[in-house]
Image 1 (tube, helix red, strand yellow):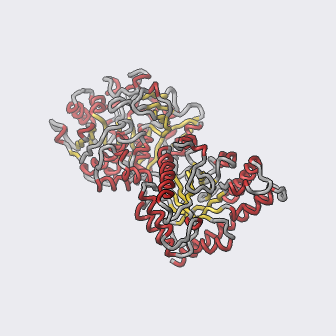
Image 2 (tube, rainbow, N blue to C red):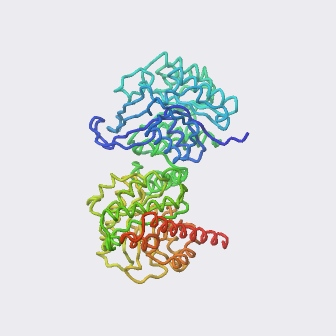
Image 3 (tube, rainbow, N blue to C red):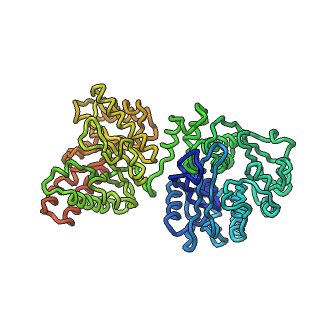
Length: 640
């Protein structure tokens, strides 16, 4: 049968809480970043980022953290059919820190955790049949129940022609050989662990470990002797990781020196964080192995992926996309602290973005009701009434979206807070404005703080949106002030893991031609601002759109795309602008507001229409605009 999966991993799945204060004790950490973790989970994500079709077999708790893992796996492109929800146990947690270049303290919270309840019943033969390879990790050989699950999966893999691989992944703490405070420990001698590992090593085609991990697998602290002991019970290719000395592969007899094995190019980089580096290495190795590459090439992939991991914060978030790996291998190391290589980090972030939920944002139909000043000027407005109206706007957006991807809103926090918070988790794309309405030079909402520090409080699915009234003919001081504000906000958004949308409206400042918007785009890229999204005013000529798109693609081939704004234009005028814009693939859709809600808001605030009628009217207008855009896109595709 045709294999629909390249790799299935099996074993640990946890939530990693990474201390954000680098250089301090774990005792002193004041805040933590939340990531998914556990070696098999990391490898499933790492291989998916490299273009392999991956899946993981594990258990998570039937609670918030378990749902987080499942949802994040989906965002990473990992098949979650093998992820079971355990109603009786909690998802495992790990607390981790970066003390210095050599100390990385961590605490495992795994007492009767969900993934250690994995059993033979969780292993489905049909699922295993789909895979080209199955990857096991050492921890799940430490308990009879989980060991039985792993052995069943391996037996089925071999029965159905799948390759098998082992990441020894030795954590003495997880074998009951070290105390809770010794999570960082990587080696404790144990004849019992050695015997357990050696009883399974014959089941694998590939075995990967550090020198210390081969010591436990081979029962000797002499690496050559340990490797030879493993070779006595297994014909697998053995890949031994040697830290800064690189890795070495042995397909046959073990020579007298590690240097006599097959090696791949290494990378001279600064070690920032070793946690999860082995899983990144394994992901790159699997890519090369399954693609049929020679060991030097496979090890080059592995070494590069490991280099990314040791240079960044977190485990899974540090792993590269295939585009990033190819870029890095072609360009090479420009500076050893990869996390501070601006060009590389831009490629990393842009090619590893994942949509909230399983959303597809290749088409964007956005109802923009983030307006503040326009509502405040309407008859009958009060803050409470304005907030209530924005909840009706949200109802209209959800009614039109009807659970489908490709729909979104723009909503503010000042008037629309209740609607903004209610929108979270609905599947809508959510943009949130930061500019003080109408300001020029640009000023930001005071709630953000002078350093934009309040972005740390934003929901991760919120997109930072800022509108800048600017023009290529702005005087030097105005341009410098506005660019500094946009740059400060962009930097803060990146630091907080938030996507960034930049809206520019030059027509409100001065006359425009076919190169006006393109010039502004080039100016913002020149100061290091790389928006995930652009929001541009309608341009009446195809030449203007071509120029703007060329300016974007010359600087960022991985941008999310462009949405067209409305400027309170009548529906017929918007239809005409959509007809031009829809001919360009990078224009994903529209973000329109007052055309949808303007008249309805005036009537509702004066008490002339009911809530239900207001929702119905806005939903009808939003739906019509969606239809107009979709028809314009279809017509453009047919014309092409």
